[in-house]
Image (cartoon, rainbow, N blue to C red; front, side):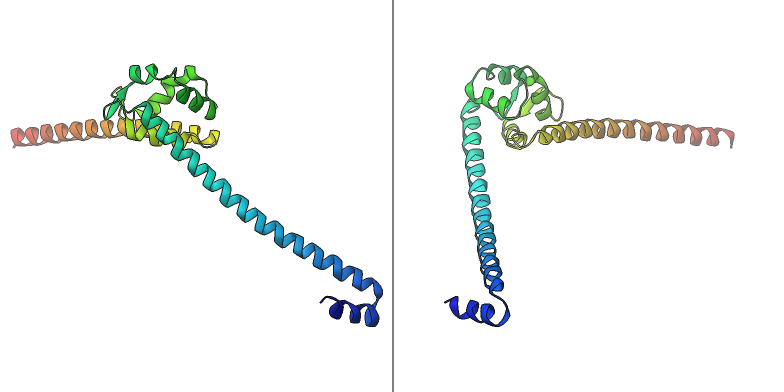
Length: 175
C-alpha cells in the first residue's frame, strides 16, 4: 500500500516528508469527501423543495377547487382564515393584512378578478426569498405602466390623425 510510496520519501529525502505526505493525502481525501457530500446534500435539498412546492400547489388547488377560472378579492379574502393561506403568508413573510396587495399582484388586468391557475403559479413564485415578492411588485408596476403607455400612444395617434385630417381640409379649402 502506502508503505511503498512513503518509505523512499522518508529514507531518501527526509523523515518529515512522510508526515507531510500523509497530511497531504488526508486533506485531499477529506476535501474530496466534502465535495461529494455537498453535491448529495444539494440534490436532496432540491428534491425536498420540489416536493414541498408540489404539496403546496396541491393544497392551493384543493383550497380553490370550488372556484371558477378566476376569483374575486372577496372569494380570496374568504379563504384567508384557512391554515393553508396563513402558512403561505407566513412563508412569504408578509402580514395577512396585506392580502389585498398580494391579490392585486395576481389581478394583472385590474378587473377585480385573478385567474386561479396564474394565482397558484404566483403563490409558488412568491414562496422564494423576499426578493421574489419585490420582483412581483415591480412586474405588476411595469405591467400597469405598459398599459397606461399603450393607452397614451393610442390617444396620441388619434390626435395626430385628427390634426392631419384638419390640415388636409384646410389645404383643400384654400386651393
